[in-house]
Length: 95
Image (cartoon, rainbow, N blue to C red; front, side, top):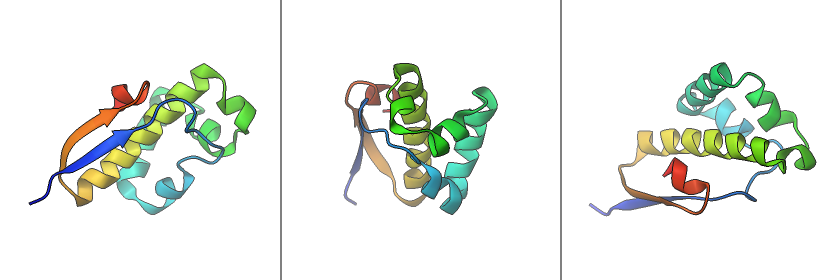
């Protein structure tokens, strides 16, 4: 079987509405993002409703990217076996 690698991005990859599609489509992502929302109230609003300027603030960028990347990896892991993970900058934490 081929091995699959997953690579996580760093700051700068965030965008308004980030994560809304996977939140609505995949139960694994919804569960992960709901858990983050419990720990960081207002996160889903920040992800789904904030404008680009608000998302460029480092404190917002970091929590949004980390939560999104963990949600994406939960969805991917449900469907394929991840062989390894890597990340650039902030993405190293998700990896």
